[in-house]
Image 1 (cartoon, helix red, strand yellow):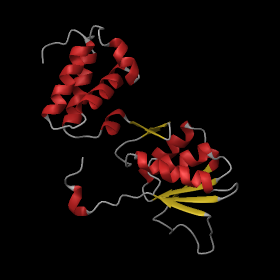
Image 2 (cartoon, rainbow, N blue to C red; image 1 turned 90 degrees about the horizontal axis):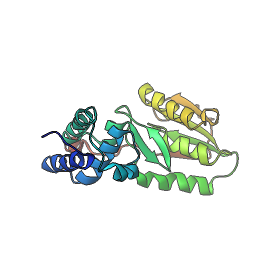
Image 3 (cartoon, one colour; image 1 turned 120 degrees about the horizontal axis):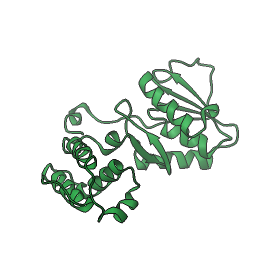
Image 4 (cartoon, rainbow, N blue to C red; image 1 turned 180 degrees about the vertical axis):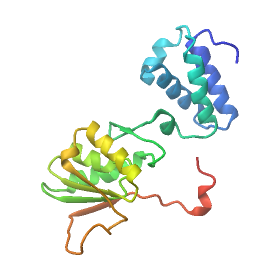
Length: 203
């Protein structure tokens, strides 16, 4: 592309580039990535559209657009995902939290009682466990994952949201870390449920 003189020119290029590569959410993704490159909130981007594009911004943005053009999910590119109005760190060691999973958190938060023990299987980024602990400090949460890399991400998110003292993180393959006598009031999980046949077509 020719050197973009303004931020809006850069954005226009990004949208067109993503569209060429079959990205259905080309406008949204181009805006999110440009805001990320500028270290601004997406809404702040609109206030800067007429600003001149500095020499560092363009190569940075082109790199981000290149990754998205290769169908890397936006959250893996930016390293963040919002869930339950909280900011979560994500990387390729964990799955990206989905908005519909918030229903699970809201349901347990509404029906759970003070002192209830919650077990989450396959915590991943910790989105469910951290959100439960953040919004329901009276609950006691144990979060497990078979992956140590995932548990590191979950602990980072727990520290960021200041709930490390409310969650016990354990490496476990489903229930294997627990004795038959151990009891919980709730067992929650939102594991991947995608067939191997469909995996090849996913981002």
